[in-house]
Every structure is written in C-alpha cells, then in structure tokens.
Amino acid sequence: MGKTGPGIHLLRAFALLALVFIYVPIGLVVLFSFSSAEISVWPIEGLTLDWYGELFQSERIRDAFLLSLRVAAIATVVAGILGTMLGYAAHRFAFPGKGLLQRIVLMPLVVPGIVTGIALATMFDQIELPLSPSTIILGHITFLIAVFFTTVFARLQGMGVELERSAMDLGASELRAFISVVLPNLRLTLLGSAVIAFTLSFDEIPITFFLTGTENTVPMLIYSFLRTGLTPTVNALATVSLVISLTPIILAGIVGLHIQRNRRAA
Amino acid sequence: MNSETVTRTGTRPGRSKRKARRRGTLATFAGPGFVWLLLFILIPYAGILVYSFFRTDGVDLIPAFELMNIERVFTDEVVRIVFLRTLWIALAVTALTFIFALPLAYYAAFYVRRKYLFVFLVVIPMWVSYIIRLYAWRLMLGQDGVVNKGLTGLGIIDEPLSALLFSPWAVVLTLTYVYFPFMFVSLFSVMEGLDRSQLKAAADLYASPVRRFFSVTLPLTKPGIAAGIMLVFPLTFGDYIAPSLVGGPDGQMFGNLIQNQFGTTFNYPFGSALALTLLIVVLVAIAFLERWRRVEEVKVF
Image (tube, rainbow over all chains, first blue to last red; front, side, top):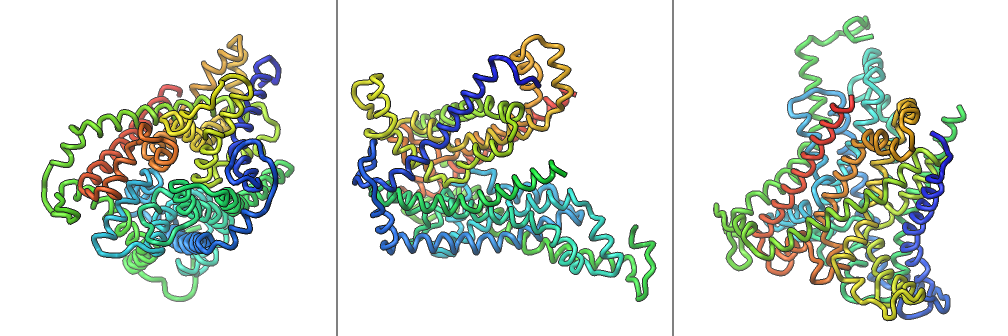
C-alpha cells in the first residue's frame, strides 16, 4: 500500500482530531480535579489539592474504594478458578451440550447488563437474600467467568492437547497433568485475563446497580453524586478511580508492546 | 504418541474404567462451573420468563399464567414511543461509531508504522470507567461547559445552549464516545489481517485509492463490521445509565422503563416482560448479524 496521495493527509488529520476527541473529555476531569473553583467551569482560575484532601477524609468515599477493591479481588479470583476449569473441560473433553454451554457462559457479556441485573435481583428477592456486598460479588463472578473461559479456551485450543497427552503418557494423572503442564502454560493468559476482569469489575455499573444494598462501590457512588448534586470532590474521586483502572491496563499494554517488538526483532 | 502404545510398569486400567475416570475428571473440572451457570444464569433468566406471566398484588408477586404484561408491552403508548426512540438512538450510535472508527481503523492498519502503539492510544479510554466517561461529557456539555464556552468564544452562538445536555442528542453523543473503541477494535483486527497481496492486486486493477477502498477493502472488512455492530448495538440498546444522567425526560430509553418497574413502581411482572422484550431484540439482532456475516463470507470466496 502506497503512502502517497492527498488522502493520507486527510486521514492523518482525522486521526489527530480523533485523538483530541478521545482525550479532551477525560483530560478535563483530571484538570478540574486540581481547580480551586467550587464549580467545574472553564477556564480554570487557580490550582489546589484540597479536593484530594477531602477525598481522603471522607469515610463514605474510603468505604466505597475498599468495597470496590474487595469485590474486584474476590470476584476475579473465584471467576478465575471457575472459568479456567470450565475452559479446560471444554477444551479437553467432548460432551453433549458443549456448544450450548459456550453460549450460556457468554450470556452475561452479550445480554445487556440491565437484564442480568434484574434477573439476579429478582431471584435474590425471591429467596429473601438481602442485597449486600455479597450479592454484588455473586453478580460479578457470574459475568467474569466468561472472561476467563473465553481466553483460557482460546489459548488451550491454540496449544493443542499434545503437552497433556505426553505428560499423561509419562504416567501423570489428568489432574497432575493439568497442574504441572497446562497451568504453567496459561500463566500469561491468566494474568492478562485477571487484569481485564479486575478492571471490568472495578468499573461495573449496569449489573451492580440492581445488586447494591446500602454500601456503594466507587462507580455507584459517583453515579449517586451525579444524580443528587455535584461537588468538586467528584473530579478528584474520578481521577483516583481512573488511575486505579488504567494502571494495570497500561502496564499490561507496555509489556504487550515489548513482546510485540521482541517478536518482530527475532 | 498416544497412550495405547506406551509401555509402562504398573497396571493400566481397562477401557471402561478409564472412561469412568475421564468422566470423573470432567465432572471435577466442569462441575463447579456448571452449577454456577445453572444457579446464576439459567435460573435467573428463566425467572424473567416466568415472572412475565405473573400478576402483582401491591408489591407481592402472584404466580399466574396471564398474557396481560406481554400484551401491555405491545399496546402501551409509552412503551411504543420509548421503544422507537431507543431504536433510533441505538441505530444512530451504531452508525456514528462506524463512521468514526472506519477511517481510524483503516489509517491504523495501513498507514501507521507503530500501529500497536497507536491502537493502544485509541483504546485506552475503553478502560476508563464508563461512569467517568459519562461524567466527562456532563462537564463538556453543561451550561458552562467547554463546548458552550468554545462555541460562544468563537462567536458561533451568542448565548450558551442549555439544550446540549439532557436531550436524546446528548445520549447519542455520549454513547458514541463510550462505545466507539469496540467498533474500532473490531474493524482494525480484521483490516490488519487482510491479505496484502490481494489488496495490491486490487491496487493494480482499480484506478483510484477511493475505489479500491470501497470495492475491495471495505467488503473484505465485513466480518469486522458485523462484529462491531454486534457489540455496539446491544450495548446501546440496553443502556440505561447514560440516558438517566444526560438524557433528560425526552431522552429516556427502554432500559429506564425496565428500571422504573423495579425501582419506583415495583411491577416486577411488567418489568420482566419488558426485559424479555429487550433480550429478544438483542438476540435477534445478534442472530441476524451472525447470518449476515456468514452469507457475505460465502459470497466473497
């Protein structure tokens, strides 16, 4: 493909504009979090760190952060175990209804969150399980299983069954072969999926909305701030939460780019 | 190498025994996941189906088999208006994400040297919390927001526009921003994998790059287009957070209708019937797109 012609300049200009469109709104939130004015209006008159101070003093906000981290950590671990085992089963064994199973696993990712949310909320209501952090965790595990299942299954299909076969030929049991041969090969996949799962859980709102009792996660807290009235603290809260969700992804991305470059160099 | 030919000491279990053991292993690995999917996906979704036929008495659910709720979905004036609005918003967002992502994906796939870095830069916002991206647009579109200040500053308008926020248009703009990375990734991953020699042949056949793009590159990208629509359309159609934050009364969507049945009026059966409708719309759209994608593949090769 040639790199000539007037079209390329147009494309480049468009790409530049697109990046502006992508980053200006988010950048604005970060910028306003340092603005000394009580209301977030343009232009910014002075700078302050007061809103971050308020952030760390607010018990409500601290509780929300702790809850979000707890939910994301537990849900990622449990979904990781269930999803990996299910992905391995789908890869290793033929059983009736396998195709259907693969579709069902993906349902919570395909179906709009509101449907999954009310479906779970109604069920919890019927079995008289009060909404609490536990119900949020149950909901998050349910949609995160799909993340691990898909990535693990894809990775195993790419690997083939030779490795486990050889291990079993050498006398290892299925379980032993899984633990000492399959799992080590899944390390990167699992790490990547865990990053994705953690971030998805930390930011999730459409399902969480219906499963929240009295304790709010960070996104739910921001949502309620947006519904009831804005304080400049929201900017600081959003900025901190942005850093938490972006850090693992950016680290994973840098590692990924590195691998990409090494592969090309090799 | 396979296990039948390997000689090793110790007894080798018989065929049926081995089969039984395999079944045991399968149960160990798939069992917990199965139970989970049954308890937290199948039963709850089935619940929605069942409740659609129930009645309410105050806030109590009365088991019944009535078509009243389903009927109301089809006859209620408000449902009709909101459904059509949701449909056009979802179609508009899908179209806009496509128009926006297409040149960008094309540029990334064919003209950027460090393409993975570029893709990375484009998709980073996908990992910024959904709610923060919504909030960002509240700041952008508000009365004293950047857009109004910019427009008045440039002399395009005299007074700040109050209608920027809290309208269906605000929902369209915000959701386009929120969901376009999905479209971009879908298009890019297909375009990137296109056979370069085929495109080069096309370059020799067609005079202009524009014709080459529309006659060869774009049709070959169809699986990516289908995948992108498959992601963006359902996500938009089922969204209820964005309309509740930037939509205003005229921007409420189908999801908000469902939300109201569970939050304000506590009419679970009617809410379930609405949710079922949403589910069907989304699944039909996905099935249709899957077919479309496959038919195209047959045509191309």
